[in-house]
Length: 235
Image (cartoon, rainbow, N blue to C red; front, top):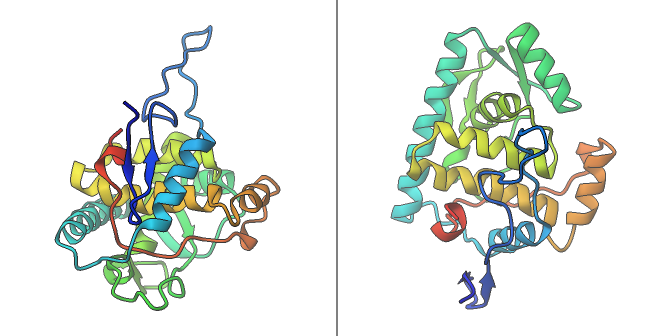
């Protein structure tokens, strides 16, 4: 029997055994595990799934997952700040610049998301937190998460800002989250990331832009507070 789920329009979307799991099973001749790679078929399934999500911030299950996710993200941010890491409102040209800045300066810059939630200001990721940047300004939850994800996801996994790198950083970062929080983490990383890289309208263009290092022209996913089926998240 083919595994899968029905989207909001009742269309069956197979998951089967394609895609990529949280653990890479292929072993090299040296015994080292290969870094995870995104199967485009799986990427398209998740991208289509993100299109089918609704903005449901008041749904009890959505609210529960996001509340736990935010709580655990802020705990990680406070721990990083306790260890001397400073957050500044800017943007890196690539992941290597971020790795170097964190390692040498205990400093990380991020792109502010104030303009990313127009029309969905009730999104839980848009609310202000008590975490402050180097200017003393309170940071929004999304900005805190992106900063924390860069360190606890991308840096720990040595993962670039590419489709494969986003998968690797997700696999690394989810180790620090509880099961309920992972539900929101999946939407915020894999859901949005797969949409950027594999959506039918601009996925091919976005992947090319990342290959040439032009991140300013990327099409980003619309912000939504909703959850994927557990069969996708924990497959």
